[in-house]
Length: 189
Image (cartoon, one colour):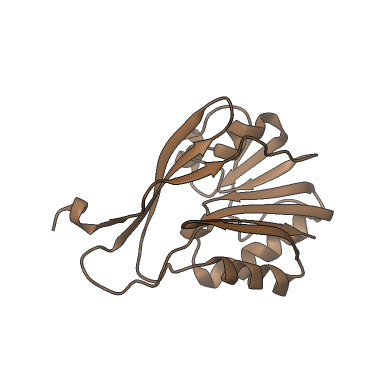
């Protein structure tokens, strides 16, 4: 079977980052690749990714560190903010709670964790086992078009899963919104 026939591709999802403002420093979880948050907030950002190659691909601007989000190498209460831009779709479900605990730990009191991700329905079998979410990201000064994808089986996720995980760890939900097949959540410590 050709690779193309394995793709389940959503319609283009529009993400608006024109007005993103965060006071203080920002830890960006999974900040490699396009490095969207690093491009938006530049030198306010410490971008981590467990894959060195992903960080090498990311544009200049943030400080880049090879690090696994399950074991952050920062002291408690180190950051004002944390972000995750379409990263949890690559993290195993059994690791969500560990990563959330680490983010909570490194955030200062009243710190915020902003998360953007996609809704992935349960895989029902068949040949299309690669789930793709094409994005058009409006950053104000430019628009970035990209696609993120994962091997679909076992990767289902939705906004409720993350709201529950955040609350279980101790976060309060500041706000959230669903847009077509994507969502955005702001957690507050």
